[in-house]
Image (cartoon, rainbow over all chains, first blue to last red; front, top):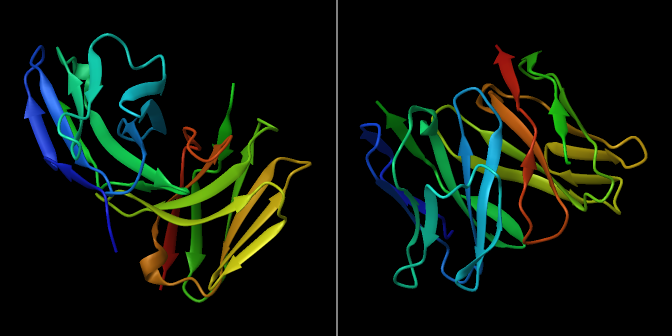
Length: 110
Length: 111
């Protein structure tokens, strides 16, 4: 069964550093999403991406965040200058009818 | 805005039925989902229901939707220890739209 994959599974970074989280969506899916889950809190929508552009973003998704589909397969989330409060699980999801989630990347900002 | 609420915790004995409840506020919610999250893992889609349905059954899982009260429930029959996890309900306006999640219900199955 095809699945969404994410790398790395865990990323530790220093505050102020840039991080890039990677996702490989299911190949024939057209919509891509990033969500995050701060420990013990709700899963929150960050951004949706369709046809190589952002279709919707939440107020969390500020100028520090960007998304890209650099090579037609990977879908990346970049955080330009990480803050302590960016520590969370970041989930990529893709859709073909239903939303399928990747296993997540745990980001720890020190 | 949209809001989805769930109770925090449910404890159930192995072999009994579990019922997890969820309420939502947005009457334009079209798709309602149940996801399962095991420790350290991602979100696994269990089942979903369209807003024009009252009930959906899938093996041990039964979803009930009361659209008037904006209440969704997930019943797990013959609950097993492997069902111990956090269960999230979520809603979206249409296929391709973002999901809005509840806070999750932690289900603990006791032998």
